[in-house]
Length: 537
Image (cartoon, rainbow, N blue to C red; front, top):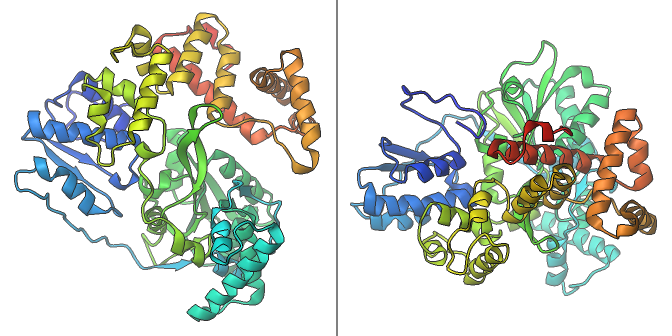
């Protein structure tokens, strides 16, 4: 059972569901009557919902359901943390840990320098995706006593560091390869070279080694960008390419499990949905970009957002494990061995790095007591300042009263699977019958701005944004006007010209359109708008 699909019946004895479905079940059935065994998989991911459920289950085991059996599972987890967390509610003290060995074949692990050496890749700084973060390179500079390096210094120091590392470890790569790797690492902390990914697909295709290729990328925009490059390549007839993303229909997702047409190689481009949720048996080659979308806090909008970030070692090992299910596998991480050494072992729990307003509403909706007191029982309790800020913000928008009880608006916001600030925008948009522009603005706030600011034409781009904002001098209005213009241009066949003219990102606009559609569907499901109000989708 997932959010919009269910195969559950009165005869169901085994139910697979998402953490969100489990939370809704807890709302209507706090004691989980009729459930004898609960299995929670992929506990290493430590998202807010998982940590929230852990607190509830610990209390359930302590006071209400002493007979409930809880099984926590993961292929890569720090088991000791979970043992100590649940030891107080386990009759025998520390819960036992069972290690179950898999039957996978060996997987050879390679890194960026190997990919560059094999393909003779020429670095193009205009290619691919960059985040604008340079933490790794700044760290190298600080270690060498040059903390604030300009680009030329950064490249020189990083090149020296790679050559020293190669000499110290006895790892042999050509100076050319080490120079290209230094250039890529120097350019950005979170960086994907789309052309290098295509070159690896070409390399394995020419080698004629059978097996599907699985490519891990952070989001839909990167999936589309790589698909476009593969479909334009002269070897395209030898490839059958599938996207794998949460927004792809279940029927389309099933295609990745089928053998490709004769004479072609299956290439799957996926987000971390394929990291642990699915296993594709014929995958032999994995390309791990080392990047994921991570929920963080955006101070500019005062809301959570999905931002590109480096994976932790646990995630990278999960990705590596997707190869070798049917034969000897190969995994190439598109970051250097030096960077691998500095990756975190596990990702930071989401509860420590994201706004807590949605969680606070759920605590009140489930009648779990005081917010601050409840969150003290988390495996990693969030800072008191973060909790206080969330409560104050919910009171400011009148979702909680002065005694921290849910208001009528708070109950409505708790029923929507979006941040309360976005939820209130959408509810008011529906009430005042302006849902289309409000949904677009809300979507742009929760994704990113559609406006591109090229360094060499920043002044022109700023003038375009002001022009679209007209006399209102509103960024929100400018986003809405840009979106309307893009939709019109797309319908008339001059989408690219319009976006180039107004310095807009087609990928971001497509993302905004999908998010807007999700918002309107959420309002339809909750009964806030009638189907006739959804004229734009």
